[in-house]
Image (cartoon, rainbow, N blue to C red; front, side, top):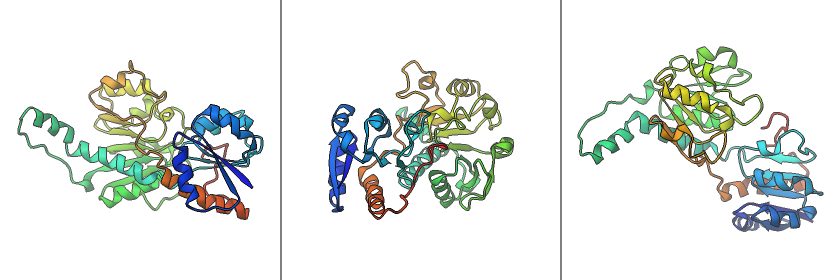
Length: 312
């Protein structure tokens, strides 16, 4: 009998969804916090849930064989010194559509001047604002994993011109051209928007810093929907304040929640959301778990296994 511990504030919801699949040889235990998890973890060989919480009880999971993350980011479980004697899987493919909705919502809101028009409405001020057709908008995506590729597909559906950047420079059908970090100047040339979909790894830490920001066009907008650690926030604040770039849409930050005294709150050309661009909806995560559990029973390779070294 396999024993699953669901460690999440939505543990009951996950449990109800998984039970509808009528999975064999599975006993389910629930924990909404770390203390409840510690009481039950020693006898469980499978875990599902929040990676940040799972990390706190990882050392006590004596029977552990597999962890299914409910988050796209699994850096909490890939740090140096943490155990790696189990299979870690991510819910790859779940968050791409949500991220695409977020990026395109803000991109078109800025292009169509929705924030300015709302302000004009409140002041009863009639002022038509110009905008560009979508085929004149150039979007660059840094990080061409499943999320970045889906974002590219969505953007091209609207007619945007899309380029991408990845480590290898390997071709990607979803974008018009692929660059590597060896040609950042070429990548940033003429871009109107730059979307970051990078994971949190030592290699991506502060990928965006002062020298990189200087390569962007003065009117360009940075959109970070990956991980906060990929941006040097002090450098970004200076660039935004001094007109090096046009603006930023930020859903993730180096430290969360964003500190009340952060200058980012006060900048008029910054749009902040509290890490909600792509929320974990149990119905979708449970579906990934169910498929992987069936593979687990058959001793087949699990879908979306994470390489601990690379962090994704």
